[in-house]
Image (tube, rainbow over all chains, first blue to last red):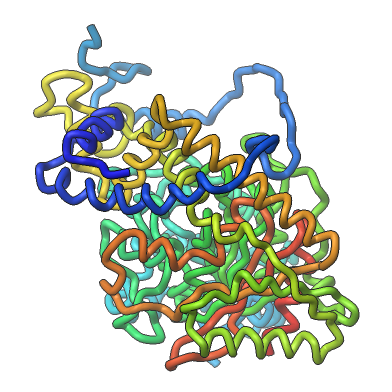
Length: 96
Length: 473
């Protein structure tokens, strides 16, 4: 699989990454190299093999949906790292 | 012997016999960090004031007789663990000024045990790498040869233990990130079973393989730390309720009659011949102590790297979606024209090259039209790798392999990403299968340490530690 500059740009767009022209040039061949390496998996016969979902055998771990109190200083510290806030809310630019 | 050079066990005895205080022990470590860190760059943040306060409290606890195995013992934690009130960067520009609002569960457990946090260690950005060259804050150098890498991604934690900046350290392992630097720096490093210790409060990389674990000076020390940090956590649903053994007692048992598998697929063409000899010598040592050595084969090992470099970037692209410049960390709000533009600018500026590469790789392998061919196929081959391990572990108790194919390489030597990824080939498959595995020193090649890897059955850290202990002098 060879990725050209246009395709790298499309992926970066999906990943919400602003890339410089230089980065777009470099990543094409580097990503293509890794993709051609991982293509070898196509040769493995996986007929009737289930994909792995969990490795230690846990299934459907449940808990009650309850609000837990969090210490106030920790809440403040977490909210305080937002660039803009109003009271307990984080301010963002308009969405629509 | 200087205080900072002590093992946990020796420091414990000295503290309990009142030969020295936790404050003296802590100061001895802080002094070495101050003196050596400019050269090695193992530590990103030093918490001197907090550490001295914690050491004082530990001394008071010891005076009252409220002693656990780690009370008063100074340690360093990889800078992807949240430690309340202290900066946590994950070695990324995007988190350069982030202050952790709370403690990771593992840190909380160590705090309750009375261990003393000295600071935070360097890593590859978001733990993406095997050399700590991907840190946004400079490469960590190998204390055995400053021109060489310390390995990664827990390179700072391994180098700090090797340079005696602490009594032990914490790392995290996703595909070899504890075992590789342990091998390169000549320390002990344990990756426990997936789910053995909580991931809560550790920056997520690959949620299906990430585990916290110790880097130490001896196998016995690793058993002490692992026991202290293990256990079920309501904040991490993947943690196990399987009982934790008394590893420290278990490691003293002999290995007579133990069945040790040697997978031929881990002794590959092109690997360093002297490393192979060191590993074969370690195997002979086990045989001489009465273990049965059994040749086995794990033919799907050769696909582990390809599987890993689909699953890991896929999970990374999802886990790192949260870095949006809105809630915390770097935010390029000022010049952005709209909300979407904040995401693009923040992420474009904040993430380093390898992190961007992995995010894009994962975005690609998960995208419409490619999901079945890459991600689903990789999870199916992963099932085959796991089944193969299961079958082999019906016949043997542990497996022995080299930890890495080479000794620590020169800084800047692995320029293209794929050649860097290949350094991980021996450590990836146990991670994909969630098995416990550790690296212990087994020799010296070209004046650099070499590690041997012991892989065990699910939840059987005890036997892994016991075999590892029989290899080290």
